Amino acid sequence: MQQTLTLHDRDELLTPLYQFDRKFWTTIAALVLVIAPGILLYIRQLVLGLGVTDLNRPVFWGAYLVNFIFLIGVSMAGTVISATLLLLKVNWRRPITRIAESLTVFGLMTAGLQIIMDMGRPDRLVFTLLYGRLQAPLMWDIASLTLYLLTAIFALYLQLLPDIALLRDTAPATAPEWRKKLYTILSLNWRGNKEQWTRLEKAMLVVSIFIIPIGISLHTVTSWLFSTTVQPGWKSTILGPYFVVGAIYSGIGLLFIATTFARYYNKHLKEYITEKFYENLGWFFIVMSGVWFYFTLNETLVATTEQETLEFPVVAAKLFGEFAPAFWGMNLLMIAATWILVAPKFVSDKPSRNLFLQTTTGLAATAISVVIFALLSLRLPALSDPNLQTGLLLAFFLFFLLALLGVTKWLKTRLITATVIASAFVLFGMWLERWNVLMPTLTHARLAPYTTYHPTVTEIAVTISTFGILTLMFVVFYKFFPSVSVWEVEEGRALEQGSGD
Image (cartoon, rainbow, N blue to C red; front, top):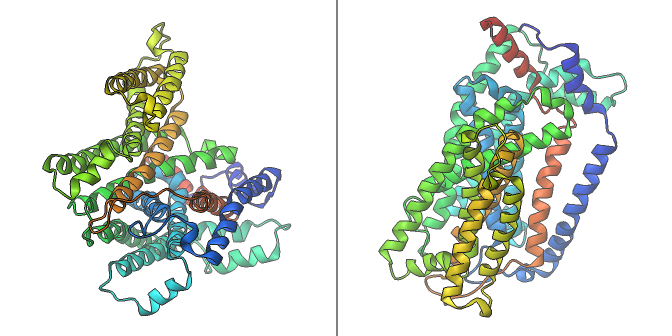
């Protein structure tokens, strides 16, 4: 392979791996503080049992399973998008390939933790593996999750192999001996000859072809866990594709946030992960937004218009019942995210005196719309008059529109910031979407009277810890391996030079 990376490039990408500075240890300490309360409360749950949560019949699934569905969803976009772009031979994917594939692995690992927490006793997982029956839908999920995780780890390892050999050969004299031995063992005697490159490229191609259907099968099987029951709200034939679409949509959002985190945490990555990545993948993000709205409309409209006796109470709970704030909040977040991605592309770069396009107007309107939405969500007796509620609802939509208009020009000149904000909205909205799939049905079960469910302090703390653990894995992993694939960037530059670009 033609060597196109300079000494500066390799110094920027490899030297930081051996620098454990104050910023690194501060980050680790902050993440430990975030994780510790959840671990302590989980230990308490192990001692006292699942009674410390609000899980009970018929609400036997709660925040833990919402987290599980969400995490396997966001993990999908990593490897599947990376594999798709590899098959399409898209060159701009190279700097973010490793971040995407590592997110898949870490996301699946933390998703598996949610199942263990939801089981109450960890030994039940062992018994499930030893004595579980393949006729049970739970075993389908365990099998597909295990296969997907193993395939994702293998894909990540293949992509890492040339860089591990590079680390083996360029490790500084001050590097610990155990670390040098680790790179030597993991490199599998890689020497970078023509035969090894040929085999690596074939292996990556085969894994890329197989991992896409494996990833789709995991999210489809997860939807079958619900569809094989007799509960209202889970019988839709669109549930499988809906889960897959939501997984890709939220996964792209997490990929944007993780890439930006890596880009700003390690300043040297800015020259490798440029705005071109945000522009190109941003269009796919916009397309997935439209697809998600289409599926959501189908899922809601059919159940609403048929008004089936058992199904409609579930839909009513989402549209104007106790879950309405979560349902409409989800949709508003998605609308805002789509606006942030699309509207700035149609706004002029020139300064404008239009009051509606001023940032201050947008911020003020945002604050007012948030207050009105909170008032409507709290369902205060003083605001129970239908005319007053209608007025507040109209006022909310007016200020919500003003908020979107006001921030448009500010976002126009801040592509990365706008993409991260939209991604955060999508992630929060997709977590609420998973909540809306589970909770309305479980609180309106077929054979049990109406009940309620509210996450306890234990579940909230464990949820926060879960995302802390995901971030910690990300930070620690990239202290041992470069976050940008050195050999892929090198290959991409060689291809660009060979084509005369």
